[in-house]
Image 1 (cartoon, rainbow, N blue to C red):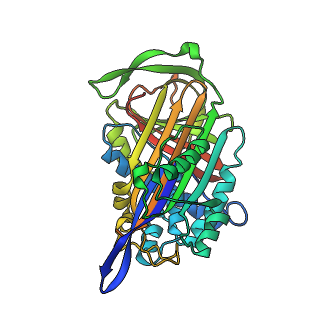
Image 2 (image 1 turned 135 degrees about the horizontal axis):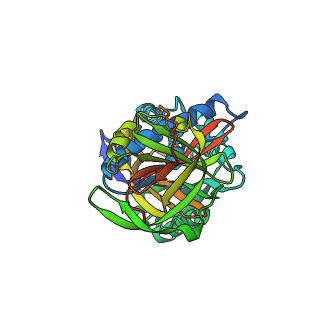
Length: 424
């Protein structure tokens, strides 16, 4: 998944007899980038950042699920949280306060130190392919403040590259080429060329890519066409995979759902499937999940032999994030008159975010799963457990929630989260 942030400047406006320059920001968000860390593992900064990301993921999902009712939902919480944390480094005043509240991180130093640890931790996970990267594209000759540049480079591990946004086609090609490379060609055309112009000042990008094999792979010969109930009255045909093995499993009476954890070859990486007991129970499940700490979703599970039926699915999503981020309390960053990003540059131009977008991709099959995401921001000038006695059967033939997570040194990372309504 990737995250992109770009800053640009607009034509001058006259306010109170002083000249100001409008800032236009495009925020493209697509692959997942996790936390950074300074110091030893499991530092307080790391824990605060990862806890903040978990809370951010819950609220983000709750909002987007309502906005995209009846549709597949898939996004990378960490990709969005990471790129926003980078932009947070350049905020001041009420804008910085809004970031602290929305990201659930007390201050900018904690965000930067925590993400340094996250980056190191996630890029060193073994036995699966997991890569997270950040990049900043800066308008040629646009002066970044030394503190902002240094923080991005040393803590978010984000190198800066100068480009000429006036040549928007060439600039978009360069940015999208980097994203495509980091996501193994799964995320393409993250930044539309028409989002860049002579007013663009900065584009911040985050990309995340994951590919892993199941610890217990499905037998392809057992996959067959079966019905998937989109609702009680509507079905679609899907390729349903089958396997019977020991998995971590529990039944959650409060959620009225079954919870299954399927591990990858690295047992610290897993996909959790939350399946409502009722075919039309996804809405009620999502309402209840809004108050659930997903880092605890696997607590109380037991290893049991389970007969699993899971559809193959492939989902690609593109989301304009302005609406959801505004509902999360970050509306100020899109306000060209109120946004305060004075810690980014020594320039007198006033920056704001004009657009926020995230692209995400996931494919789940018999061998395992592959996922990617990217997020970008463009800134411009103003302008209860039950132990069943009978054979356990887990049939995911109706809408469910899927979570791709990583545990590293007892630290929880929410990489991808989504709702599968129609397997593609």
